[in-house]
Structures are given as structure tokens and as C-alpha cells.
Image (cartoon, helix red, strand yellow):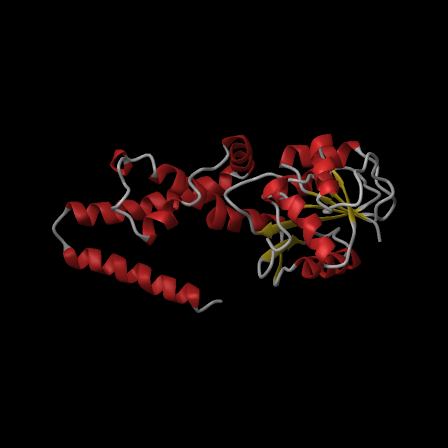
Length: 271
């Protein structure tokens, strides 16, 4: 089985390294200097220039670049082409808009770091993590099973199946909303001179504030309907807290806090 990882940044580079650790040798595609570094590090066997010889192609590129790569290149008949973008519905629509000679599967590894690039990639990034695989009417069952095997070899502990629509709705809440909230949180003037005043809660709230706007702006806009819905829901809830704090009703505040605590316990019970 010949495997290609197209895009050797943090996620793609880590996939190549995890595959190597799992007993598979992948080729890679990226800018010449990045591919050369990946070869030198032993993450990939060689840099690829054409793609028709591969049985499995992981497309670890931003959404627009991923669609361009999928649409403008030739893959062998029956090849598995799996993008790993953080949005799924727009990619799925693009791929299925015309007949394809390959088998497409949308995937999204739920792992990462606050840093990017091949030199920050590591073979154990996915150990114990989840990966999402999206199902559609045209999804090939055999392709899914083979990818599941590869994902387990990479270290993923949980494989979640859902539609592209469900993926984007859930990710708007669990990932994209969290980044926006963290990014907005640090804009308070009170944050100046914060050292010595913080504990774990501040680190938790600010860890993902430093989003790369060149990457995340496009991701947010490709899923903006779901994100706006979640933002409005959050703002409505925050207004409730502000209203009771602005008034003189400690019992009402205790009710809101208890409501949130019980909701968290309910969610914890779903694990």
C-alpha cells in the first residue's frame, strides 16, 4: 500500500511520523524545503511530484488549498482521498459536485498544539486522541475500514462517525467558539500586568487565544452560520449572569451557577 501525505505541517507531519512509527512508510508533498526536511528527519520516504501512484492520499492542507489539490490533480482509480480539514460540509459538497474516480472520506483529527509547522510535529500527537470520519451516501465502506486501521496505527483511541453537517455544528461549539471566546477574553484592559494574579483558570482561558488569523479566519467563515448560532447562545447566557449581578438577587445568581454545574455533571456522565 502506497501512502501520500500532502501538506507536512503540524498535523500532516505528525501523521507521517505516526504512520512511520506504526510500520507504514509514506511519501510527502509540500514546499521543497519542507519536504526535504521531512525526508532528512525520516518522516517520509521521498517527496512526491505526481499522485496517481498512491492508494491512500491524506490531504493535510487548509480548506481552499485542499479543494484545489483534490480538484486539480489526478489520482488512481479507486484511490482513497481523505482530507483532514476542520470543516467538512464545504469540502464534501465540492468533491461530490462532479464524478470522481477516487473514494473520498472526510476526516478530522481532534488533536493539535498552539504552534504550527513541520518542526513542531511529533509521532505521538494523536496518542489517545479522537478522530472524526464523516459519512455520506457515497462514502465507501471499505475505504472507511482501511482508514480506521491506519488511524489506530497512528495512535488514535476513538473514532467517531457522523455526517458532515453534524461535524460542522459540533466543531463550531467545541473548537471554533472556544477559540473566539479566548481571543476576545484577552482584549480586556484588566489583563495588563496580570502576572502574579493568575492561577490555572487564566491559563485555561487564554491558552488558545493566539490563533493564527491567516488560517482561522477562513475556517470561521466557512462555518460561520453554525458559529454565529453558538455565539448568540453564549451571549444570551452571559447576559443572564450580567443581569443578576447588576441587580440585587444572590439567589438568582446561585440558580444560574447551580444550573451550569448540573449541566456540566450531566455532560461528564455522557463520557
